[in-house]
Amino acid sequence: MKNVNKDALVHAIVDKTELTKKDVEAMLEAMIDEVTRELSAGNKVTLTGFGTFKVSNRAAREGINPQTKAKIMIPAMTVPKFTAGKTLKEAVK
Image 1: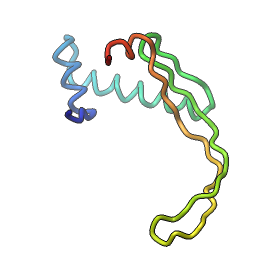
Image 2 (image 1 turned 90 degrees about the vertical axis):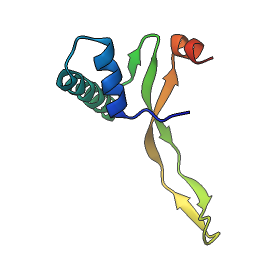
Image 3 (image 1 turned 180 degrees about the vertical axis):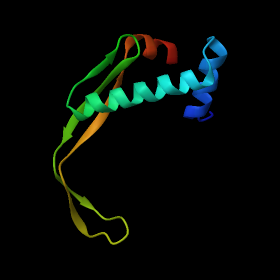
């Protein structure tokens, strides 16, 4: 299994379209920025067939430091989550 980074993704899109590398990079950056902005505002972003990006609240909890075995409090936080859509799930099967 190989890891596909943003640069490899840009090259794959350039190969499948007639767009320039610069245009694809700008489009990908704009998409990432917009998804990030919407999630920061507490909104949900749905790409039909691909999946849904949303934010989830994680409650404060007690954890253990693996090095010292001391108990620590992990604060409450808001985290991004991704749920795969039906088309993506079927393609990965």
